[in-house]
Length: 182
Length: 182
DNA sequence: CCCTGATTGTTCCTAGCAGGAATGTCCGTG
DNA sequence: CACGGACATTCCTGCTAGGAACAATCAGGG
Image 1 (tube, rainbow over the protein chains, first blue to last red):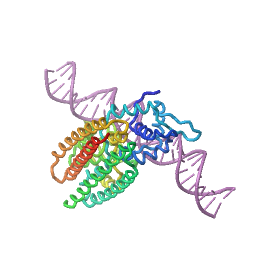
Image 2: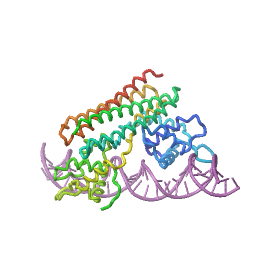
Image 3: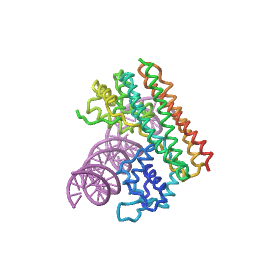
Image 4: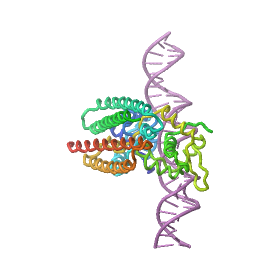
């Protein structure tokens, strides 16, 4: 067992496995990717396929996951040790500050190179994107019930929705502001 | 002149140089890093020192920046070509969707592994962080006037402030919600 | 019953990037 | 004049993104 520090992505995957720990079959890397795309991506970038397998290998080396015996594809299950480790990380690890890479804000920052018209149309496109993404997340939210198992997930989904709403409001405000500019 | 695609970070640096193009001296990599830490980091992660020099080398190869003659440290200035290129990228390049890596949301998603108490104290820490960061940005905003040169930068700073405010509000809401949970 | 294309499952490769250590220089201060 | 701190740059290591490649399986159509 190697004791290298694991990346947040590794813990995120571990978390997805914990969510599913009632299922004795475990999950394949492929299935994990689908789950990640469906839930994780709203708060943490969805890792590439190759990355998922890399992280799983590390988790496996650290004995935080085990491979369920099967003749087909490799299926992963969280171990007791893994669940403990996740809990330790959750509340004793460093909680870093959110990382934001906002291409629209980046462009807006250089706004004087362009006209308010150009900026405005970029903001409108962004508003459409936000609406689409919000609709996606609303779909996810609608599928979550109120049972204990998913209670916090639902809460985070609500957070996400509020996040999109507030960004849309801010952007719409800027859009209006642009009209008053030369 | 190599025509490789440049990364958003390269364009961000180019943008900082354009902001300063009245200054015939140009800027060193070190100075650019300071500017980036001061402005860019609220919307785009601040690149590491080594990364800045790498990007500058690429910009230089593409002739989007030139080095001002000087016997001391290397000082970079944007070229005519660079400014054109930035403008092209701004409005004809792909505007990707914002990337968010939110460690607090990530942990909240796994909330059932912990108690509302633990979650609550994490949210409070996060609220403090948000307040500190907001104060930083407010400091930047206060230094910006209303002259055309910085008009859009001020607008983006306002956006940032609104962003922090809305996240703080959302987090505070969740904090309250936790109190009603078992 | 074979062809085709989509889905599942996994690995490999390449370039990029983070971020800290290492290396200097220069400058003011005790 | 030694020393700490700001300035300036490079180097190294390992992680990460992301797409290409490779297979196997499966479903539907001619």
